[in-house]
Length: 177
View 1 (cartoon, helix red, strand yellow):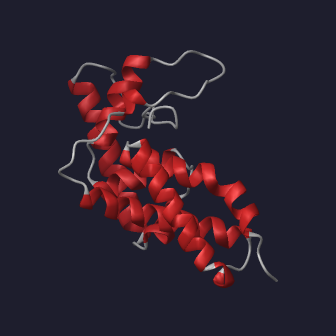
View 2: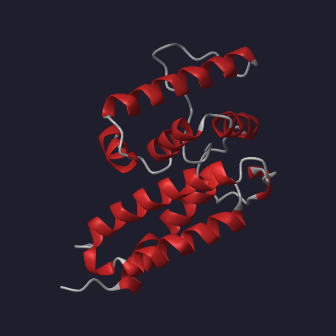
């Protein structure tokens, strides 16, 4: 059975671009990387079994390509997330100052830890799924999450933003990342 490439692109393009954009914080590079990943997917279409496999394959590809791209462009200045328009969010108006500071703090995390946080809180993936995508042990993923959240919580408390109890939930959401 042959998978329809147009359907794969239509179902996954926003996820692929969003991951690259949130991780790299540069719209042009994210677009270019997303195109490259879909081109690579097209070349590998005969090896893709179904839509679920395609989604998993694309997530893994964009994660690894984003990390590689960041390493390659480490010394070039990047635009901040402030230049990217925010999606409209229904409901209660979030604390914009907290979101901006949290976004900056997440952006300052090391590459692998940042990718783990983005996959967990933007893509809402379980630690086992993240471990499979990034090809690392589940314990390492949990370690990255724990250390990153502890670091973010500590930095927020140090800045007097919020007093978050140890067992409390850090407000890291898709809107924040």
